[in-house]
Length: 131
Image (tube, rainbow, N blue to C red; front, side):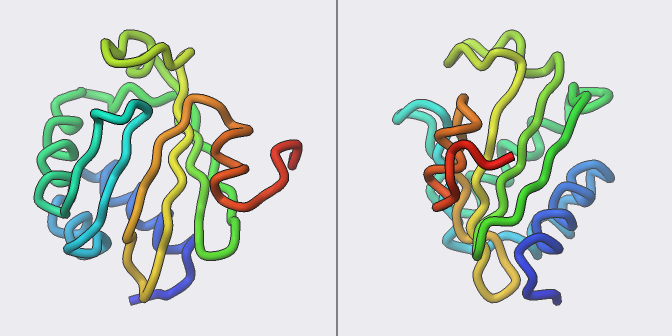
């Protein structure tokens, strides 16, 4: 299993694209925590994250039109945009979300969602004006 954070997150994105729940499971630490864009949106372990992943598989095309991956030390920022994010009942997403993935020992240990690209960069320890 690769240790490189970018490769781990890329493999996670690919596993989700292929709807390979076993591969997704392998890439997530059992104690992974995923914080959504609001405080009440949180998954506290791999089982809870996998529940949401399975729900996302219900979208025929994933509802994603654009992906962006940016390395940031032991974190990777994943920018995701598309129609799936237009009608989120929990927050105004503006058609996109930025997810900071923290990777340790070849597995994702934390994910945190941001509406703002600049906020995601700050959370990952990168300059907010990085382009």
